[in-house]
Length: 341
Image (cartoon, rainbow, N blue to C red; front, side, top):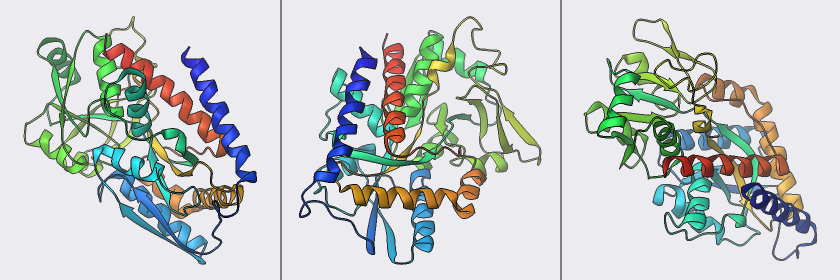
């Protein structure tokens, strides 16, 4: 049934793309020059914000007839910006940083009533993937995954997060549910506050991007203890200058504390997001922004920077980006069903 729903959604989105060519010229337009606003649903300094600003900088340098500016529109852990954007006229030249976490919560909210959803994500069209991340479970120095697992199985492990059923929560929550444990999400606004909650001892763990705690790992104030991947994560440098290999939730380097008879790869959620426009935008505008996004990725300034903050170089455009989104949603729904059992 989930696969059938995904196919229907993908088909509907495909029709939206095809229909763009017949849109009335007064309601859809392209902008070969001028100011293009990129709406970032998260606060300044977070991974999504940094990516938005790097994208804008590189795009502006590659297309000097255009000015890309980033505007942060926080609230509802991404929902406020998504609601605002979904109500814009399809002819808008505004773009949206469209996170998979928002998609997951939208779909869970509409399917299971987990929260109130005030927007229809079928009004937002991904142009291309610009952010693909690996979630890392962080603890304070001396914390072991064995201790975290035992805590989850007894009283419950407290994690700092932006919102319940965010993608970090779905990842850790489903993982611990498979081990008969539970996760308690303590909400904080922004990654900086989430990290501080961990270092201040208000929570037990923090699940974040590789970039989010790169400096803290090098300083020795936080330690990476598990990677939500099928391969061990390599790239962190510890305070002694030596590389740190972070065990994974699956594959040959699966953490030895995890039950070897259980498939924990279901906890690996596609994470990150897209640069997006409105459904109903002109075919010309969509093609133009896809060209911009491809050029940004082809630039060493962007791709090398992504590699430098240890994010993944993943590209998908047009219908491939739509399919990427729909398949990711299926993974998230499966994770929710596991953690809610």
